Amino acid sequence: MKSKYKFVFTLLAVYLLSLGSALADSALVIGIEDCTLLDGNGGIEVAAGSGVTVSANSSNGNVMHTCSADVTPPDSGRSAIFNIDNTGLWCGLDDGSGGNAAITEDWHQVVSRSGKAKMVCHFRN
Image (cartoon, rainbow, N blue to C red; front, top):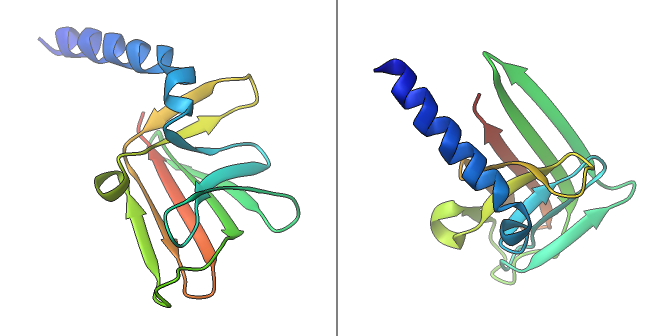
């Protein structure tokens, strides 16, 4: 029974990865030295250069990728919180090969009143 679930999960993972370029149009992406994230008003913003920090932490086979950058602050004057539930967007990991190396629904992003953004994407193994 356990191998049946592994097989189904593997098929699902292959299917989702095959959507790479289609999802790239509807995904926030953490790259090697840059990332595509949301500004404080929910608009897409590409962050690159010296102000961007991209990092990864791993434990128990799970990997957490983080991108921190300065973005346009929220017009509301309050911090903004984004995730799959309020945006419908996925988080993708770009390993430099030209497509998304992995995608996940398990992500969140906070943008402070001053425009400091931190996006965290969790990839489970």
